[in-house]
Length: 178
Image (cartoon, rainbow, N blue to C red; front, side):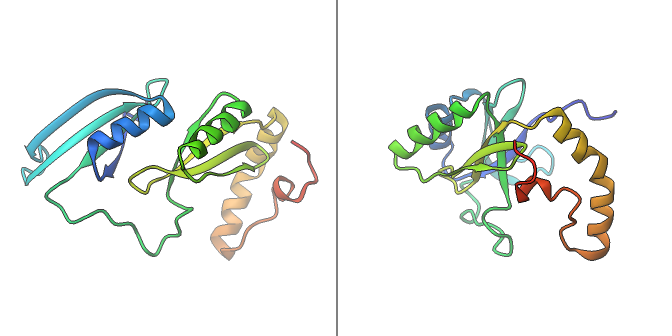
């Protein structure tokens, strides 16, 4: 396989320092690197930026760019808020409950826990408007095997109909308890 892992995922931020402090405080991420230039290395465009890197655990890096010379941040208005998000794995259901309580105590609105059968999660927004999800995996090997067995049938049916296939309806109809 060519790709070994994700090197980093980069998003735009409104304020680099605020973003570092928020991710440290609320998600315990360590600030690992800052790179700043007045010219974009790849394009040579004059565009000052601050590029910050946060440790998201296990060698995963979450990065942000502050771009003071660009128009204010926006979002794709044709995409619902719930679609574009970053899901981060946590170790336990208790981590979800504890983090939800801490975030809400800081005035941050949290949705969930939401039961997705193979994982449970909470959702909230960072100060830049990026939707974050904390997810705890709880699927059984049997559930994962069942999903693996129907993935191609599902994608092929979706490709033809653009309607939700029913091959894994058990995930949402209650016919299999998690």
